[in-house]
Image (cartoon, rainbow, N blue to C red; front, side, top):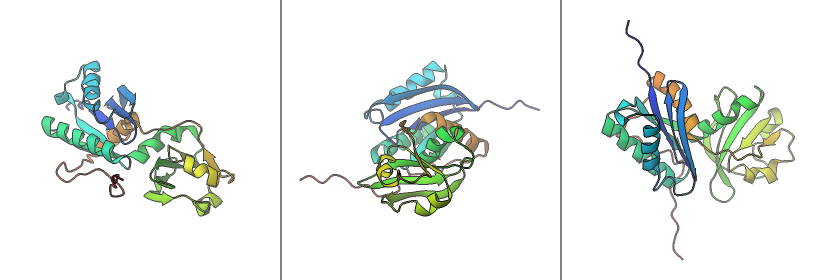
Length: 231
């Protein structure tokens, strides 16, 4: 019987201001690179990819697949990440894997809370709106990804029966409205999406052969892009 071939996976995450790339060998993280700058998606993504491949002594052709955080998130960041990932897949003839940005965020904190807590990753949208979802500690979806306008009644039914951890850059909008609820927990530490957790989830998808169609796949914007109208 032939030995199983190692899986080398490059992951890309630029759905927010913090941009990152990572490489996994099977379930092991080999390297990651994060840039805390708004320019990370637009001008530094390709150099990041080239550098991390060099650090791991890998050629693009040696990768097994490319993974990308599909959204929700920044319209520009998602567009750049997905177009870069698709272009690389075409160039090296390897499959594309997508991971929900919010699920990757939940993956970061799930080991640090009791099993009965629910997790609510949040990304800042416009005004009092956030992109969010609810997951349990097994990262099973309780409420699907959606855009939500925050007020004092938000999550009331959920908080009546559950302890919920709110985190991400959208959680600040909830804190004033919900902080008096004893079942609402807000993290002091900033949690940003990162490529390490995108890769961790993507390895599981690779094993199940859950690949995207390169022709039809698009970022998960959740809402239509609204540009700035000149005054």
